[in-house]
Image 1 (cartoon, rainbow over the protein chains, first blue to last red):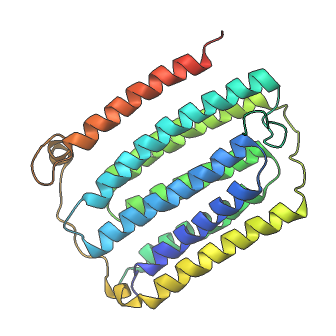
Image 2: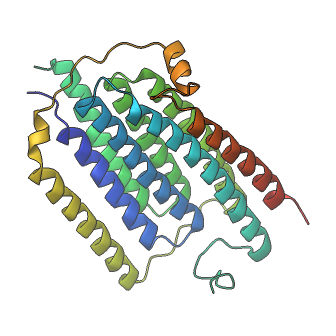
Image 3: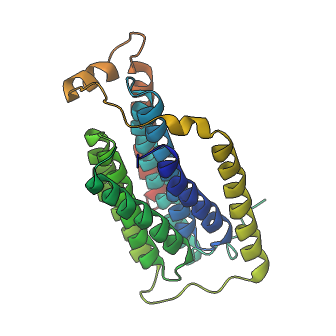
Length: 103
Length: 171
């Protein structure tokens, strides 16, 4: 039995689905960020797997994943700074209670 | 034909990814959710190591598991009293979430299985490269060079540093 490309894409697909579910149903802003990280991570796996199986002589997918990891780190740092600032102002990180910024 | 050890490693990684991703979004304690995310990220690094991208696996562990997870734990500790559960969701949004996730997964799975010709691709040998070569690609302006995205990322990181300082500063 050989390892083929579907055997790596299906766990990443399930990971992405979990991220979508958490992103919609969670109410805590930090939990929403965690779901977002799941989705980003699934996309990174897809880049690497497609690169490794379909174009093994090239490195494009690997570079995309490197840049995506850097962007994800920057984005998470900023978002958590914003969340902590919101907590400082409202004493809460629940998105149902934070509705003054919505419209 | 793969070796049996490789298949066992693959099975452990795949099961870990599936189980811990589901647990990450279904557990009610936020700190446990962050811990399960850590396991998912480690399993992802395991995939990179298994596919012979050792440098990428090391970056994944260093940046994600070492950096982002610590940030998450700091933010959770700063904004939550320990031991408080998340509230149960009202049912409408829960069903909306399940519907969106299942529909998305179904469409993507259909697309994957209808293109099953690409399953014929197996793990071939990759041309061995060293880290010095990777650095040359990252800083070259040739056809496969990545100097422009590299500089764009550095400007993004600078903007991120300035933004973090401005946002987190006490007024």
